[in-house]
Length: 306
Image (cartoon, rainbow, N blue to C red; front, side, top):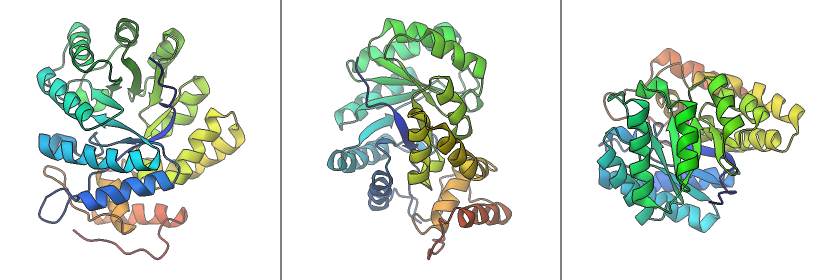
């Protein structure tokens, strides 16, 4: 399956909530517009950064539909988060994402269940068969799921199912990532799931990034990824090190706490979360403010309180 468009910087979008806890669809549309204006052409709603595990099926549908609406008008693509620790639910999520117009789905390894490699294979097989020919992106993030999709399993899925087209790798295990890069079938995409690992992964042959930091700095992150993909290594390296403090501060507390605090400081969202997540500590917010100021991202903006 040809997914040449699945390359470059994608943004794992935050989900803006109102003070009453409801999803703020108008702010969601505005965030997507800002991403496209900043050079991002791949949008990823309803992932980890989007607090999707606290959202209802209908809220997921609304957020994905709003993202698709803006993306279609602006020439961007949507890879919708559609994972669950229930295979039946992941299938249902993925079918809904397909029905509202997503270009692909991002399916995380089941969390909490701790399936074996055989169980992981069957989980992704079920989703791929249920939504074919819609492209499916595997998402490996052991720090969140307590299980790891082994390179052998990723490669087997890539070979066995034409519509399993990519993996978002956030294991932090370069040896595993290199095994996937070395053994992947032609056209299978490998995307970094960790901002700070992206420069190194692209140097090894990866195709791009699903980014948290691009929520705050879409232009700078997309420029860094594009420069690396085009072999302009000095420019990419300089941007990588310039952005590294932002990449780091986004994870000093549980994500998306810091990135949502940053967007509130920038006047783009209200700093509202769904429990069990809560606003970041004051010390963290000041660290976020300092990094944003250094990057020039706080020009004439006002903090939007919860």
